[in-house]
Length: 282
Image 1 (cartoon, rainbow, N blue to C red):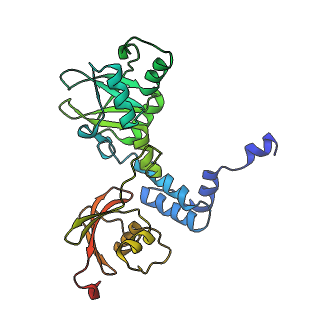
Image 2: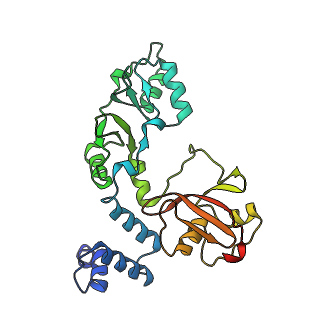
Image 3: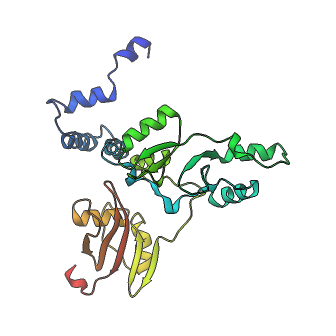
């Protein structure tokens, strides 16, 4: 294909507009419906539709919806020694670490694990002086939209921001990965902890990761759920509601009672499940 042919070939969005947008779109709901029709007619696949929808959600979601709260932040005190730094970095497997002041109320900056590794690789016998490697931290309010934050990350070439509450106190942190997960779903790597998908709470109650396969659920409970074109328990529950349920919603399906413990605007994360007292009514 020569350059002239390449320039004349309509883009994906142009083809989509020509085929489906015969009238101007006025709401996001109309656009979402067009995307569903495009998927139905094999113009795009389901993965592409979900990514587009996830990207649209970034302008509605706020930093507080994706941040890691302060209580779960891995921070390094300003007096930390080289050994302290190394121990923390190995244990946490993170790549970026906020340095907090002596009063634990202000972030002095961020250091990267690779800077310490490069220092150690040089066979240095002196203490690692983190101040020489300290990088500025981005401060953002909890109310900032994830779309605006993503643009900040791109413009400032940064991967982490410190989240401040309305009183100017540290509320948490948010990373580029946290934002991208709102688009493509959870991103796991070899350092992520492997946790049980089903935890027994006792008294017949179980905590359940919503994305576990139906087969794993069947094996654990010794049942055979009746499903068609559904791969996960989350899919089963959403089909039962015929919508994305909200937190604390409850439903009984195929002999089990499900309660939504954690959800967001795109997916279910955690469920509480127990066997129904009267399976005949499910």
